[in-house]
Image (spheres, chains in turn blue, orange):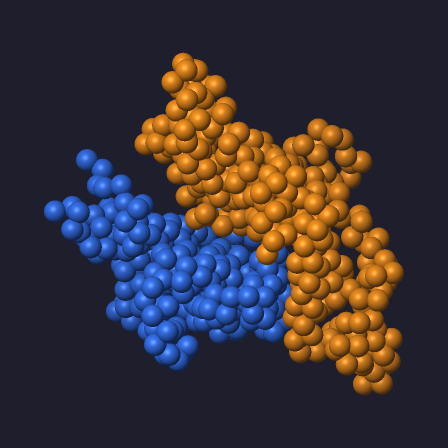
Length: 287
Length: 319
């Protein structure tokens, strides 16, 4: 029975991975639906509640420096943080996979040299520094941040695809396809890509987590998401104000918890995917 | 060996130029220049043009890069556009504090992570293993700025044990003890953020070596567990060393954030203020220092590998 289990079965057997997936799903639904459901307005000043109101029945997490509801900003900030995380990882995937494929397929060519040296360049330099430079210079709109973080995160994925392509291209079916005179683009798409891309799904959740961390660091440092928009990182920025940091932890602790929970869940899902996709890692359920 | 060194250099040099070109391009993407920033009081378009001409900003991008590169080769990084002091002088002042902070953090991380990783591999599933996995979870899941906040909250605000900013107490000339107190929190953050990957790699490298024949031999001839682990650890040191060094860019990036938060007077905070004031001379200068550090350590590691293992340099030379 256990021997015949497919990847899905193995994934579902991994309790932490499933927990991570459930947490992420609940979180996504919450940030998407709750604001509309409760009619929360993240940018509305509640003059009656006043500035820096403590938590109450009408404002569960109090209000901020201009009387906006913190809970509403937390939920809408979550939208931005999750959006940045997933879209940036998507861009990294979209850039990394084709470049990795090309470098692996054209082994020994100028393409391989150029792409792999470019990956060296990106990997030898702290990406947060480049992100800081670019975002503070280009301007910090959500889509600029997504583009910058996404474009700087392609190297890990490209290296993985590259290494897999090197082995897959020597397999018999790939050789056969070449011997039959298939066009190289077709062979890459039909034979190489599906077999080289597997392990990428396992690192993708980690990429999403990294992107969320980058965005929150940027926003915390004050060069990321700007008010009136919010993200989890920009909400934590209130903690740089000593009075908030010491006296009003309900403002900066919830977004901090959200970031950590999200990133850890993503990691669990990633670990689960890795074990499920590559049976060599599978140890079996702990009993 | 000489051929091997030449090969390694041949890959490092283009990467160095690549990094400087990349950052140069990034800086050029900025709408507006330092001349615009000063424009509020500086006034007329004429003044701005003069300023741009003096800084060489009126020239096309490739020419500016070549001018900068020429200066670099002569050992001249130019002047800071903001303070007018030479870039190398401004950076030289900041190298010491950065080295103290990052060096202490990484040294602590290595000292803690290697025994922990080895203990986790020694008894998978034990308390040690759980501690190791919690440690790497914290390290991966909690961003540096949050760790800093939490550290300051607990140790400075609640307990009042440690100072929360700067390198010395204001107004004092700074004793070693004072420096140590100020160092604990930021270095602790650098340590925790760089530990996770190290623990993970040590664990998996040790697990792998523990399966080797020579470990079975060591056990079979009746060596104690401690001696066995010493053998296993020695066998797994190279991959661990690789991890430390391949993480240097990540660690440097992390300490930029940490320096900024703690007001640590290192290269990170210099870089940060230079970016926001568009002081490109300084940004490029710090870039060069970071790139040289990363590539230098990688090169040193490659040479060490080549010295330690003749197979490595043979393979590389044949390629």
